[in-house]
Length: 178
View 1 (tube, one colour):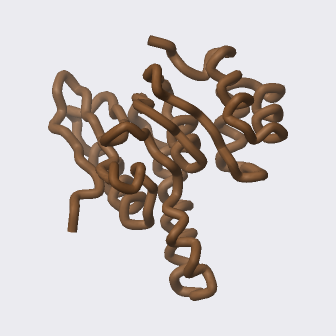
View 2: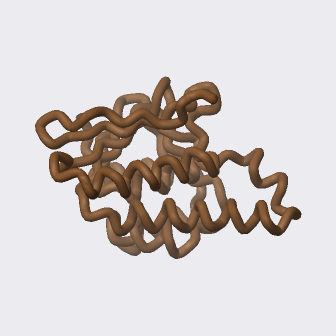
């Protein structure tokens, strides 16, 4: 099986965690989310690690959750595994005691948008795009987005689910423009 995630050795306290599914636009499968949660938990225990940089392989940061996995939600055991993986992944990122930097190297869509929002700092390339096509956000995403850009912009993103509304978040300080 192909490697889903690469993690560099610490260099001056910095570790780069790269999503390695470029052929799937770095879609966040159950396996990738679980591997990422395990890796982040392990990095916390490493005294050499001071900062975690998250990025995607290829030209996409992340297209979000692997939608092909949602086709099996009628299987109760599978659905439980999917939601447990999602909950653990979100909780691990939100509660991580290490600073995280999202290096958004291309589109950050849906769960990829969530990943960028849950990081402490976002650095966006010229090709970065932010969008959350779902019609509603869960509290796990709305809370961090609200904290990041304020209530008015967060609600605008909720109401206007187009990339244009999310790009406005960059204007009010959600990303560092390099």
